[in-house]
Image 1 (spheres, rainbow, N blue to C red):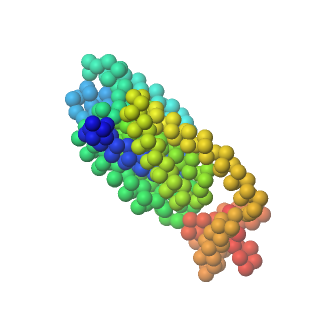
Image 2: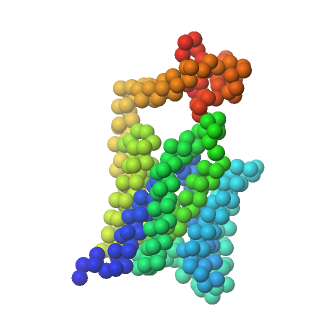
Image 3: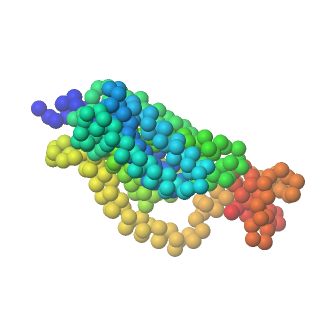
Length: 329
């Protein structure tokens, strides 16, 4: 009988496919915000959620989702309002999450080995209920990530401009963190809580080697995530090795193969076009849209001194009038 005919394998393939789509989709925004390790921190706090589920006799997956979301919100609040930097917030979550998980697991009468399947993934533990929860959570994350992609990208790329454009930066930052928390718990059965961050970040870094622009990177990362997840799962099943480690190593192999190609492509682009035509065109379009508005001290837009002139925040971008045109900054 083929391995694919087993029900647990079919469940695992669906879970891996959805994980491969959702993790890079959220990871794209984390990379843009330079928070590549956020998924790692949330994975650690999710360990406490799993242990809390074991202690209370409730679903470890549901408990992990709730605790991970709470941890993600705490990280975002510390980053935004605390005096400490984002790396300190992540360190607090790292240590507290693992320590809390081990402590609560002991109180539940379980050994640390019980957490192994959640830390590094296990295809044989994906049940019908787990699959249903995974489908609901992963589809929800994909709908939000793709539906709000322009706004989430604007907030991640330049919060100051996004705020000037009227976007609720704090809300969207917390939304991305919450989606990362849900994605981590979705992936904990296939990749594992300690390795899921790699699936959120490495496909994005790989796609950036070959693509230009946000949409191409997002699409490329999702395709690469799917390929690595499904291929890693199949390889681990036939070779009898850990699925999470196999998936992560495949993503790293993809980055290693594309990095030299990306370096050559970038060098040729710099030689052919020192000032990329698409960036110039985008800046022109944004500036042109404001030509019906003459900036000045009383125009109502925020003035930002910049060198020997003054820029104005307008429609999410900053520019300065120079003669008959606007220069973007």
